[in-house]
Length: 386
Length: 143
Image (cartoon, rainbow over all chains, first blue to last red; front, top):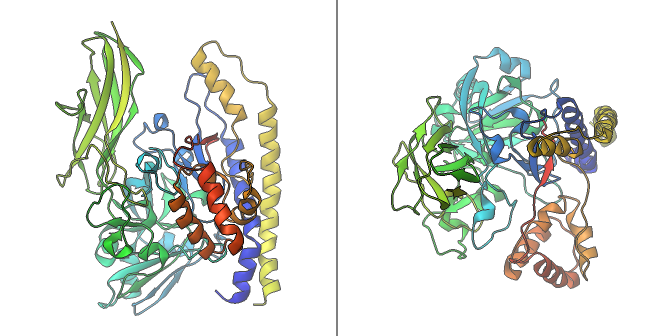
């Protein structure tokens, strides 16, 4: 970007903000609200601009999270690309650099992945001591069907060279002031395995809030890798550098004491998700002898969840929940647990998940200074009456 | 391409967006002014009453920070890039606030050297570890 472009961009940031608000206002007004008797469809906004909003847990009960209820996380007030003039550039260590229009991408073989997107900071507000950043609760997560072009197909069409080991990704959202650009890269092995340049979300064209016209999908990896408003991918010999690679989005290599901060060189970039389970449906009160069904979802950076368990005695004994049959690699696995209270009193239900690589969700998440990957046991309090 | 040509090319679509915004805001205003639906049960009442009053996602509103010596400094320095929500939800020690302010100064926040210490004190006092958790704002769903 030349200097003129840069100056113009900063000048128009507030205008872009109004433009985004306009799109949101119109679609919100048109979408309407659920009728009486159903939970009010809403999001929980944690930051008005750039927009950060999560989904209430009680609305995360479908296998596929509806697009209008899907959490939103923006680093900067985005520039919304013009679909007609937008191009995806594929360059770097390739023989034939590409510039593809939206139409050009649609003409390539399309691939679909149904998988979880979770913000690396989901659950940040539960870390103690408290840490800076958007104070997400449990709802910066969703499961969707993403359709687009495999990164592998793009790189092969461009003539990928053996020297390339990493894929650098670039969005069109420009940071304000001296804020560094949001830069990410992923290892070539992962990029070739299953990453997708997604054009659709749950069968609809990707929405501006979610990175239209194209975003990266990296199954099993945290949301920071899922670059929105994607403008360029570049095959490179080394990982990308910059604040968001070298300082931000890093996780301690070995856990330390809560409150002890690590130097960047003692940490690695966050990548695959940690195993966790979350309760979405639990009664506040129940009666002795009357069956209740507790529900939720479990997810991981492994392709599948092998077990979800429930305890009512703080982890002394565990009972296995039933896993729903519906599943795709790196999607979340919905679960349910039928429970008939035997005695009156206050019960604390806690859940933990085990993934297909054998990782078991810990009682307490590992504290880290940026508050990533909170995955402590989730619990619900139920008052059982006689 | 010169800067002014580039700017014109960007303003035209933006003007169209602003028109859309006005229409959207008008539709929302009409929806908001509708009387709440009557409901019989408490659950349906909650759903019916909550819905029309929900604001759309996003926006430009800056909810005020608490009064204090460095409020004006914070107002001037922080809200070009993010809303006040991001400040008000933090629960950080003075040391953590010092690190956050240092980072923001490096990222272009304009605060003079003389005012920096007072800003850190103000933020620590109002948004320390004992700051009650800030409830998120329920908004309409959005695409």
